[in-house]
Length: 140
Image 1 (cartoon, rainbow, N blue to C red):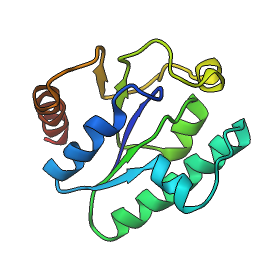
Image 2: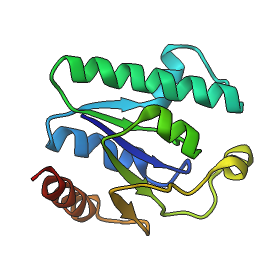
Image 3: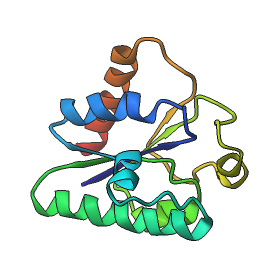
Image 4: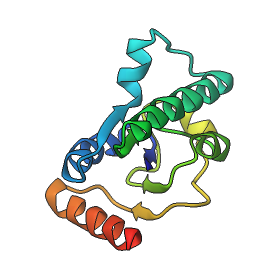
């Protein structure tokens, strides 16, 4: 299974993704760490498409190993989300503008998602319980 946690930079993707992956016994894939590993800081539209394919490839490897992939990355357009092809999507909609103007300009609100985090949270544990509960309900 591929889980996507997407949203603008600074919206709380990593804050939620890392403990979420741990709670569901998944493997956390962080886009910033992936870009660093591949020494690829290309944030053009083509670069973002390439990153979506790369993230999907890594998530596919996790799935082949019998685990759940929890990918946290901006995934700014519906095209990049379609490429990643998540089984479950969490949209971090906690800020209206991120710290990078180029990302703000191309970011499209997701058309399809399974869970919507609408505001910033101070207690990650409480928000995490809501997300996990929703996720588990969808798995039934």
